[in-house]
Image (cartoon, rainbow, N blue to C red):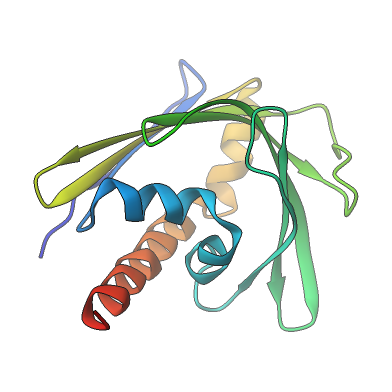
Length: 166
């Protein structure tokens, strides 16, 4: 099954646009993007592990997590929930952080995730607008596109595993 994965880095607008289809209904896809116990199963590429220190999915809440390789923490990221429209969209303010969620620099992005169910699939439209072109370019050199693709492949596997177990 070919599921759409479109990734565009627009330097002029300092925005990354991602469109990804999933072979699952809106309820499953929404939960996969908003529940800690599911996020831990798919966000990190297989060579890494996602370690969630804090997850408070509500407007004004935060998601503090780290990417881990073996016993080494590669770095923390913080997503602060700005707005949530259940099973439709949510927006976060994102930054690299220390283990307590304090920003490591004053660079950030605003990410809006929109969800649309059509028949047997749900499409997620992600717009990640950076405050600084340098941060967008840093994300590109850190393998954001490749890491996203690997994570979405993990999510495809997760959806298959839960539908095959029913």
